[in-house]
Amino acid sequence: MAEFSVRFLPDDKTVTIREGETLLQAAAEANIPLKASCGGNGTCGRCRMIVREGEVKQLQTGKLTAEQQAAGYVLACQSIPQCTVVVEVPAESRLSEHRVLLAEDRSSRADLPSTLDPLFQKVKLTVPPATLDDSRDDAGRTLAALKQATGIDNARFSLEALNALPGALRRNGWQVTLSLADVKGYIEITGVEPGFREDNYYGLAVDIGTTTVVVQLVDLTDGRTVCVRGTYNKQAVYGDDVISRIVYAVDNKDGRQEMQKAVVDTINELIDQMLPENNIAPADVRAVACAGNTTMTHLFLGIDPEYIRLEPYTPAANSLPPVPAGELGLHINPRALVHCLPGVASYVGGDIMSGARLIEIDRAEELTLFIDVGTNGEMVLGNREWLLACACSAGPAFEGGGITNGMRAMAGAIEHVEIDPANGEVTYNTVGDAKPLGICGSGLIDLISALREAGIIDRTGQFLPRPDLTRWREGDDGPEYVLARAAESGNGKDIVITEADVKNLIRSKGAIFAGIRTMLRMVDLPVEAIDRILIAGGFGRYIGIQDAISIGLFPDVPLEKYKYIGNSSVKGAKMALLSRRVRDEVEALAAKVTYLELSVGNEFMDEFVSALFLPHTDINLFPSLI
Ligand code: FES
Image (cartoon, rainbow, N blue to C red):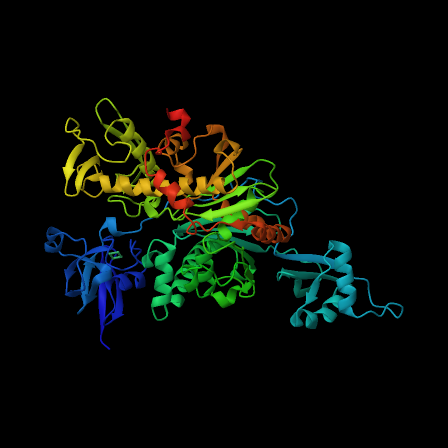
């Protein structure tokens, strides 16, 4: 089979690919992160490149205009090099540095459990010496001493540790340091060293999001977060949402392995940055707690995800066994155990249970609504007496997907917008104060609210005729509003919002509001009964709650009831890493939750249709806006 080299500009990276492979695959090989929302189907038009030298066979040209084609633009996922080629990757096609939501305050005690009993720990132990009067075996006397010192009564020796035990006990006056690993259900003594050791040892708390991955490096001896890093999930080249990822994993030979490798590579990239920076040896990282949605967890562990997306939507497992890091290829101690937090169902996973445990929803007196707004809009409603969870497919609009100039919250994303109702002029802020490249979810919420307030769109999201405004115009696909003109933007192109974009956003916000209403109806409670609403996720941080209420995304309750809790997934994972008790409590919490499948029955659909207005067809649900 022939091979061709592909050189990417301006990176000046060259890779060799086999005949028949696409430019998208070549970019993944070259570690050039590309936008590929549709997962390579040729429908999203985001993976554009410019062919500078050589020839590619184009399977289809999708959304490319005649002008773009004449300028050499191709869709990377639909282009197969026929010889050595040189291609340029424009800025707008790249997944640039992502504004990952990191733990806000590393010195915070809020994400520390009340007692440290981490998933891996070392215990210094003085064991009573063997005598003629006390001739118990070494293992028995050590286990008894361990129980007396720590209360641990379910420890077992590994063969290796047992081998080391007799010599270690006698070499240092019956003082030893034991390495203990939680194996879920019992504690394994994995190592025995003579004398008392003062080593440091570490663990990782990992949030595997569909879009981004965040890793916290934690000192297991004191619970301190040493370092936090985040980046986009390398699986992004296979599509924006979990369904595209599942389809790729199932439909392609080696697809599942590719997906697993992509997420493991993502985590390893962060590990490879953090450990040398902090002078920590990989061998000293001894445990991992991971929180991810059900699909991400399956793909990370290499488990078949096929039935997650097929009715009746059954995952292979909600509760997962710990797996040695070496089996997954993580760049840490190969024997460190990786614990994935349990989910409830195909679309309510360990990330949500991690957050639910963090806020202790299962102990709360108050009726609590916990919402993680992302592609899937997962939510949990309840308190210490009962818990209900659901996921409404909000779609990727709030993450910039399917919006003409939508983008994730990266440098250059417009994240806050105001429009002067008097003249329709706009002011905005961008992430990193960079020149605008597009608009992210929080900016979109502001924008919809502002367009409505300025009388530029009506309650259905339809554009009103406003030729009096310089930013209103007729575009190729109907009326549109110009947020940033080509001269001021970072890519020399106008940044606009179209009527189709607005309708898309209304569908997304409608899905989330309908999910909330459907859950309330299930338990026959009014919205006023909710005592607190906790918003989580990488998107939530920038949400203007009042604007979100005014477009009908969130219920119209007093702002004091709302609280933003940040990346609850990684915070909950850290607590589980530092506490076996917490890890067990997450399992118990997940088992207690009743899952509401919104695709069954008509309630959700009825609510959804009613929510396709700004803010809603029933304005009485938003009394503060009347
Ligand atoms: Fe290429 Fe969507 S068009 S990834």
